[in-house]
Image (cartoon, rainbow, N blue to C red):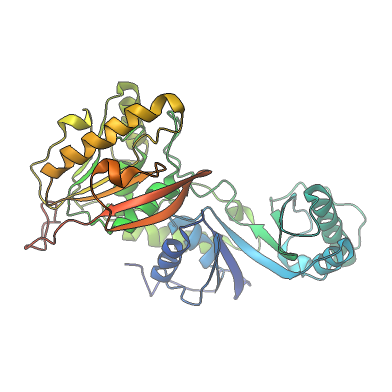
Length: 399
């Protein structure tokens, strides 16, 4: 899938870097699979993050290619910090003179979970002071104007262990650049991509989202189907770092452009009853480069049918979180169970927070997975259809 012989001329002095890709809880295994496909196999998987080692080229490649990661960080260091003095000395001991230039802008943001140092603002101030003190020693000056490239520092304390890292992404990786407008309750692009990757959908098979809203699931499916890197057309914080070098970014973007398969046919359909949401979906599809490739249509799920066999229905229906919505949502799930029986060769993948979904839908899931949609705990119910007798689907790429 990826070029193993991509030009790896020395594009930076950064030869071996500890990196950390973060994700929503429940998506760590999906993210790890993505990293292995990119060729990074020495992984440490923890709650909400996957750590690994890479060269300088790994920074642009991972930022450009990862579909389910929230951000990519350089891990500057990790150490116990039970006191402010330990936090200060541990941070000051790190090689900041090698990590950030003299003119860098380096804001510090922090978080603290189950740690004695619980004051985030105090921790941020101490980390900032420690970095300044280290840089004073290197650059022989008492004040730094911070008018150069941005290096956002994260100081995260978990169970009294401090992890100090530098954000390479800038804006979160869910910002692909196509969703300039949002509708009600938008599905995050990273979660939409994870839903599709977990389904193991292939682009030769039909894809339906009966609650497509502003189009995120169909658009992410199209990007996966044509192997288009989600970050190919956006900017990252590390692009402006002088130590990384332009060659790294040129090589990584060229790899992504070469591997895009624009000739792959797509049978992706998005339905919704909200006309304004469909207009947003069409606008977003055009922004993503799929103006004439995705079909968006106003249709109630009660009218759902398809002439295609062995397709995939992937959906994020209403959850009924508000009390006034609970009864309509129950009726919706009941009707879904009845209607989808007609698609007897299809596989269904449905995300909802409703704890009684299986009994209302009328069928136990073959598999379910706990995920988070924002701060809402949800289950991803997976119903596997029969295996097709013919391997090639109706949207196979012509020879």
